[in-house]
Length: 477
Image 1 (cartoon, rainbow, N blue to C red):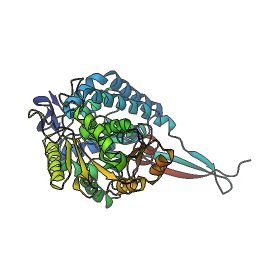
Image 2 (tube, rainbow, N blue to C red):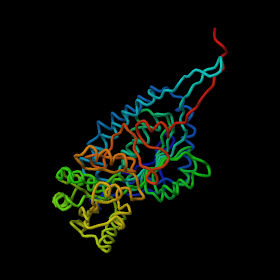
Image 3 (cartoon, rainbow, N blue to C red):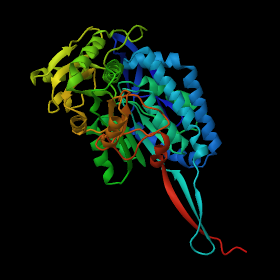
Image 4 (cartoon, rainbow, N blue to C red):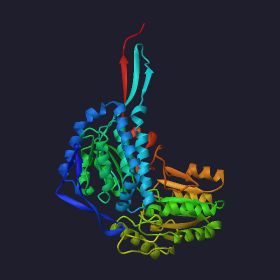
């Protein structure tokens, strides 16, 4: 199966087709996907530029109907596409199906944006004048997306970009191109005009510069080093940029917490999706009075997790995505042990025919250890003991990152204190640090995020530009 790029409304081949390999079964090739050339990336930008005037001026109902049809098809094919997602990324089948359904919900919600995109009409402060404030599309948008949510992240960037009248070039992760290709196919069959949405697959280091330089706006989700490089590249041209980057997310467990609930929350946040979420719980901060009892519960739950074939309904955690990620996880496990962290459970590679790693928990750590400073992005978490809420907040905020945070407590005062004083852009009370809704803004404070939040009411700020018009119509009778 060879899957091509989509440029200017038509399938476009390439000199290079790379295999998409199942991380749970390394001898299984899902398909061969075209890697675009630099020239093809430029062609995609040119196609988007040509299509922009017509799409920007299109009837809002037309845009709404197309996005609604995309959501309908994603919902109808959730099981089929969820299985594809699981095979190429490694998360469990129920997580894969859930991601497709969430992507459908995103398109359904965004389909209302063309109809909600209102403005203001205000009386002028000079006789005979009226002022109007409107929003217009920012233009051609390059979307660069990661491998850990291969359908949801392209969905929430694409849906809002198109809703507000922009044209798009999407470059998905070369590790997980399958879902992006299916999304491109669905978008074109839903009735998008040629050139409004373009897909170029391949190596980001090769395609990234031309996609960044040739767009009016760039939305990127990925690693902080790449995000900083994009930001530096866009400064000279003052290109609009949106970056969603790393996290080192704390979960605080206080003395009054329901410890069974806390253990469930920590388990879900740290180890579901093999910990490969930017909002995953990686630092678990527990007060000393309940530390041992909490750790005992959490270790029991971690050891009970079933690691294996993610298509098996009994599996709790599948493989990590690829060999470099597995190597990174194992390297940080070794570093943690060298620095004196105590391995409570896990830490070993499992099946050699897949990138399987035991869910790994360290105890006896402090916040200066690299395991608590660097984003590992795998099924590896650590526990830090603290004295009280004040100490916990200080440790939680002592991080370069500020994406998501959480607290488990039965006290309203403690919950509100933590909510107000956490530096993170997302705060969860008695809920996992990972897991977001599609109708509210998502993102972290710099350097975890830069240039505006995604989704919900925040999307209009990035994907449109404001215009204020003054109309001198003369004094009316």
